[in-house]
Amino acid sequence: MDLLSDLYGPGHRLCETPNPELSLVLSRERAIDLFELEQLCDAVGWSRRPLRRVRKALQHSLLRVGLWRHDPRVPRLVGFARCTGDGVVEATVWDVAVHPHYQGAGLGRSLMAYVLDQLRELEVERVSLFADPGVVGFYQGQGWELEPLQRRCAFWYAP
Ligand SMILES: CC(C)(COP(=O)(O)OP(=O)(O)OC[C@H]1O[C@@H](n2cnc3c(N)ncnc32)[C@H](O)[C@@H]1OP(=O)(O)O)[C@@H](O)C(=O)NCCC(=O)NCCS
Image 1 (cartoon, rainbow, N blue to C red):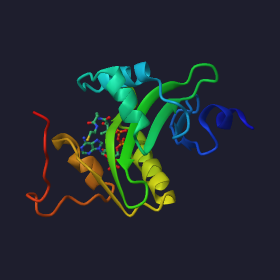
Image 2: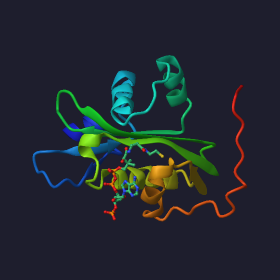
Image 3: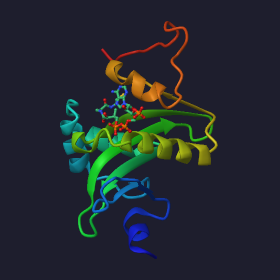
């Protein structure tokens, strides 16, 4: 097996980068380190969640995708997304993040394309997500449709 497949699994995908010194790799197979994920979430300004809950959320997710800055010894997690769902009909994308140092280079778009390709392989029919207000345009630019009647979506929050 080649080195990249060894580190990131046979389903990995290399991202295009303008810097030939830098290899960035998408993988749904390489395990996510919870502390690294926490650092990434800190870097994009998200509030912390207890690690045992994050571990459980990842275990119960349908798909976990990491974006790694390749290093043969210590790959660094610089992007992440996960999906929940039934694995056949419906999936929902959560926690899409690219480290600020790597934003604006098309990696978020590559991450989303990879996520959708993995869901397509599962033959998932419909994918949803909840965009933060400042990020709606990011998804719209990639063909996501806004919920047309904004009053149809319902939530229940634990008291
Ligand atoms: C949102 C995020 C994942 C985008 O990652 P990125 O690597 O910077 O995005 P890309 O460089 O691939 O951008 C792709 C396109 O989307 C546009 N875009 C990026 N962020 C955008 C935003 N917040 N609003 C509108 N458009 C945006 C880019 O300009 C680019 O447009 P182009 O194709 O016309 O050049 C990243 O900014 C991030 O992690 N933000 C903090 C966490 C967050 O808010 N996550 C989303 C939660 S719903």
